[in-house]
Amino acid sequence: MNNSDTKGIIGIKIDVDTHVGMQRGVPQILSILKKYNVLASFFIPMGRDNTGRTVKRIWTKKGFLKKVNRVGVLQTYGIRTLLYGILIRGPEIAKKGAGIIKKIIEEGHEVGIHGHDHVYWHDHIKDLDRDHTEEILKKSVMVYRDITGKAPLSFAAPGWMINAHALNFFQENGFIYSSDTRGQMPFYPVMDNRLFRIIQIPSTLPTLDEVVGIEGNDPKILSDYFADSLNKEINILTIHAELEGKRWGGFLEMFLQKSISRGFIFKRLIDIAQNLKIKGQLPICEIFYDYIRGRAGEVSCHSAPL
Image (tube, rainbow, N blue to C red):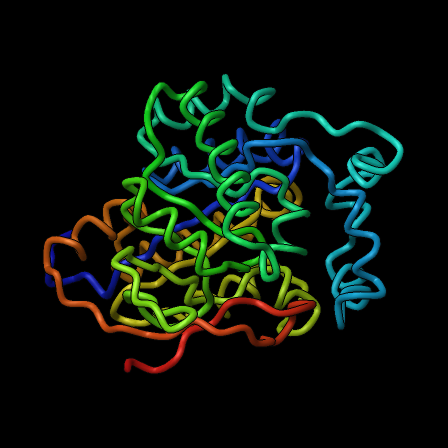
């Protein structure tokens, strides 16, 4: 394929939310990516799996019950995972998966941080102060360093929920970028009336769990929907180890096949960010909380360029 055939760039962002996603989903995704010679970016929680604590979202997150019914929560997570953090002490996702993390890196993919306690971050980060936010991030960085022997360069917020204290931490601790928002294009963020020089790479496409049961239930129909949603610039697709790494692997394969046949090229998010940093011209956008179709609760979104 020559450059004239290229239609745009796709960054595949893999969010690992659970222990079962790490142990079963990630190896399956690695196998699919290897088959199509695609490099991607994995984001992994550095602490325990407390998925069972999401049960309270039935009462606190608008549309949560409808969403889990569409996705099939038992088939996706399994009963044991749904008991982690309430009746069973959840496993340490990153530490138990250290060997898998090393394999991810050996195969040329990127590994970034996806919070410490995924559930706690998602549900509370909006209201946390600077000290508490930095305490969580320092613990996460320590685990990351212990496993990889390197300093982290990237972060993806659980549930696309972020605060200004976290952005400040990334800026002061050598992170190249973070991926915490939903939107249209990379930008430099403004939050709490402060500009941060840490590149923000939003997820530009919906996630599978947001459209399954709405746009269709068949992997072919859904892969067509996602492929037809691609633009000629930078596209970021977030997939989940618990979905595309398990019973929705067929969707991922079909999406890769269609995207490659249409001339799109795949890059790790870290490579996209490094290229953007070299170019040095990015819009400045404000981050705010809002609701999007198919997702329960708020997410971080961005404004038009300021």
